[in-house]
Image (tube, rainbow, N blue to C red; front, side):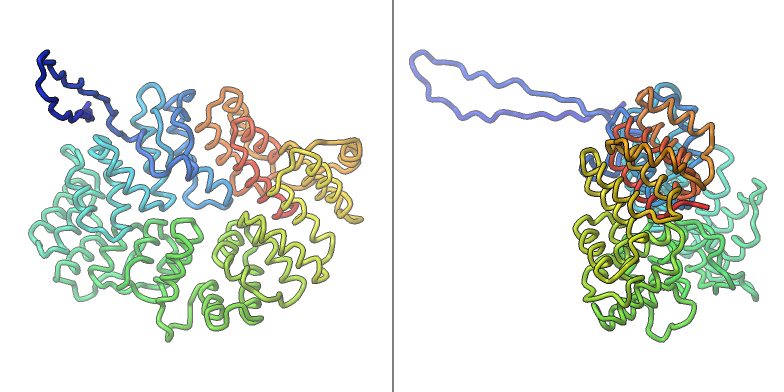
Amino acid sequence: MVYRSLAIGLLMSAAPVCASAQQTVAAPIEQTQLRELDAWSVSAISAQQGALPSDLWNRSEPAFVAALMDRLPATYESPAAYILARRVLLSGGDAPRGDASAAARERFEALGKMGAADELAQMAAGSGRGLTDPQIAQYAAQAELARGRRPEACARGRNATAGETPPPFLLRLRAYCAAVTGDRPAAQLALELARANNAEDAWYTGAVNAAAGAPSARPPAARYDNSLATQLSLAAQLRPGPNALNESSTLALVALARAENAPQPQRAQAAALAYRRGALSVQETRTILLATPAEIASALPPILVALRQVQAAPGSLAAASAIAGVLRQSAAPADFAAAARFFKDDIAALQSAPDAAAALLFARAALVSADTQLSQRLVASARQAGADEAALAPLDAALAVLVGVRNDNGTQAMHRRIDGAGARGGPAAARDVAILAALGAPVDAQVQTFLLANAPAGGTRANAGAMLALQNAADRGALGEGALLAVVASGDGVARLDADSVDGIIRSLRALRLENDARRFAIEAILAGAPS
């Protein structure tokens, strides 16, 4: 292993020679060895940004970690689960003891599925010898393609130790790299190698030929299923067909969204989808969407239509109505959270809400965005606007979670939730009260009596195996493993789970000292309401 040495030399001034002729002795060289980064120790976030401790895998077996990472979804339906999975995958640490090479590949693949192009590229560049692994090199190349950095992507493919039978992706990448630089013989050679390895694909052959300047009479339609196909389609100036983004990976969406020469309205659609999946920031998404030519008015994502109205009259009643319309259409927690984050600053600048229902939506959006001060202000505004107390009760409970429930405030929050339940809201209120209790809110006799008379109802049971494994990981203090098991156990979203499952996930996260994540899961479940 290569090590870097840090040598600090002490510069000493020459002392005047005296009768005793003292000899100046040089200070010893101080050396410190720094470990070379690898596919496990490399990180893309700091502790201040939410990175987990470096011992997050110390109590886990590599084979199980690999299997667990393979279970992570490509698209997250739970914002809380997405944040937690991202923190785990971007945190550097010691590798699990044993052969962890397969698990390292799964780590990079999970980041690729997530669409974390910038972070994946950064981590791959710092992974040392891990970058020669053909699978990691493929994920790194796809990330660079999503970032629009062709030279870096081509270098990742060249530097991979692929052996005698390179993976089809690397051969197609070589063909693309040669074609766009005008080296048609090299492009054809790469396609021949793909054919010889039973990896021939008629679409790639046609697209590479078109990119190299020799299109067929009927060039293929553009494909945006992965970032290589996306960049190849753009280089060959292929035209998209109907429903062009239906099979797009998140990295492909990022590549299309960031390409200024991408066709419209596909670029705007890709930006909205990539943002919804967490792969683009609010600011970058707004910049891309606002670059959409004004004459493009059809097939646009709803957030762009609303954004244009907000930009035309910021803070106005028309802007408020446009934002409320987008929030109202966003029924799924992930969709609502994306819209809430996108318009958070615009909501904060609104002078008034169109009606009480919109005021409730704005308050809920502030809570989803975890802005405590804005949430307090908008919940109070919704109450002043005449919003129904039964509808406000879950918002009050979620606000209590934001502020903190591990004292008398928690007990009072449970009492308020019980009082606001209404005649038919007992089971829903009981679910929220159980969530507050799982977060550590002190339970008194009134709460116990209510729970005894009102059992939480609705929701599906979390995967029993995942829940047992989660509890076991929490008992062992297996931090990274437990965090990912909470993600897997939440399935299609914690909002769809029954009260017992939500309770188990929250308590396990707290046992792993992931208090902020436990609160995010709790707020998500409370605001979504009791599932049917």
